[in-house]
Image (cartoon, rainbow, N blue to C red; front, side):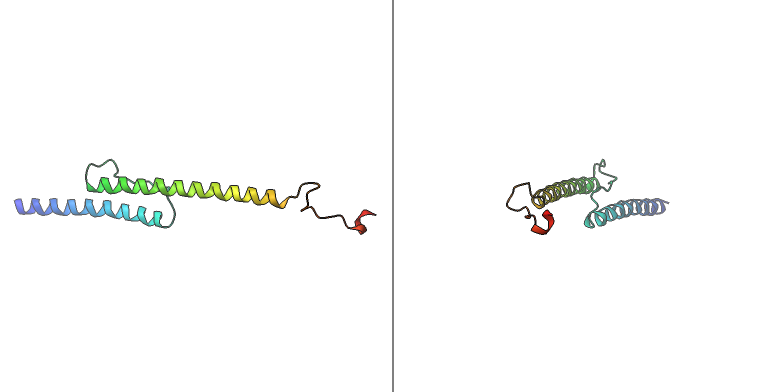
Length: 103
């Protein structure tokens, strides 16, 4: 009887651990593809799986910060490019009027 209980307990624990690892593996795959907005279950656990989940949350937060900074830089670069492509009246970059168009 004790052997059966031990076997059932071992199988239950193994399934719980492998399920938790599978969920974290899916989250890590999403992060590797650039999706840093994944939700990680298990970060509140006080075991090794909880530690892994909390570390992955840090990776996600850092990834989001890098993505946001890149988006801000891209927006600034676009704005600077727009500003440079629009010559101001009287600026040396402004195309001169052709004599044919002055008619």
